[in-house]
Image: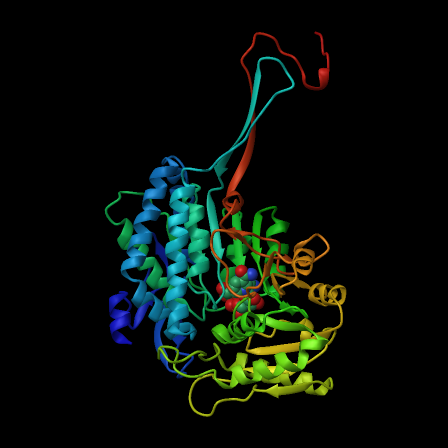
Length: 504
Ligand code: NAD
């Protein structure tokens, strides 16, 4: 453990407030970071003091004015260097993610790989901040649109992706000409400081204004001030729908821009033509991976009644093989939940299933000993039950049966969230129907791969209570820029639009 912290420049008490490479005061409220696999304290991060916050946002606003003047491909070069620094520290940072958040090492490393991938993507994007040209209706006029930086972008991230979500936002925002202030989750503050240190090192010899800023908040006071701050043009928020709704309302009240990436309640449809050799591992990875603490975790399996018994048996067999334990042990498939409250919520959800008359087929049992471990659960349930309508952030999978595809799609869409969805089928019509306008209402819809995880090349996000935001690939970069339409008259006349005459 100490080798990992040393490698990442982390000590016992770490500054949590950074104006680029400059750290603020070494005193203040401590945010303790705990290892969820043991319950032990790892180290602490010093929370941002209110006066430091003000100084930091002023510095960010000033830096934004300088950074936007730097050509986009040069901004891309800065992100390229960060990507390379992350390559150097992938193993250590992946271990820290695993240590502090509790996901298994392969997933911790995978998260860092996602940072590297989005860095590469952002470098290319820096040369592709394209606008359109239009044909003017007026003679000797030219019209086009261009994209300008917003200024200061604020990123608030959730505990379950303590580093990748930052990279999705900060790297794309940076090549677009913005500076980024990051507020990580107080459950994973060390990851925030480690990433800041890597970024600082990567940019040390580039003579740039500070572009990447870090604040830390033990509670929600500073976070709310950040959300309300008119100097922050965009708040990109990743977290629960309950908090995201409040954030969205507050940012709307000041007419700021907001990007929301909120909770999911993702389903896999297994129809009568499904290949279970593909479906079963996808469901198990989707429901048990990250101990059920992904926004894209598979929470519901909607299975055709003719395949119900077969799928249920196959899942129970597979669940018995899930090895629970230390997330840094390469043999472990499922680590702990983030804290005691998460274990209690998962237990309570299983109890709610039983009180509704459902059957918990396996799991939802605490593992004795230190750490926040619980066994992964499968329950037979009904879609309409309030507990099934709720995103319980743990390894609890609901099995629900259907008799025809229309019903399955109705069930799939019959929740308030709209993030990720999938169908397993070898029937072309069913697959296309699921992807059509009458099919899944989610931001992500897949065929013969599960709901969990996504490649950075596509736009990531979901509908309804998932918030409507899109991040990472495709044209998501536009969320970090403001659009401007320009008309240029290169003639000697002054014709008005729509043929209007206004003779003086
Ligand atoms: P959370 O909503 O409790 O916290 C998210 C962040 O919001 C944290 O940084 C927290 O400190 C901050 N916060 C809390 N109260 C705030 C307030 N009043 N104002 C401003 N910020 C505040 O979520 P969590 O438990 O950390 O993460 C799990 C949730 O995040 C799940 O619902 C999951 O689905 C969702 N999530 C969504 C995505 C996505 O891309 N859609 C990705 C990861 C996680």
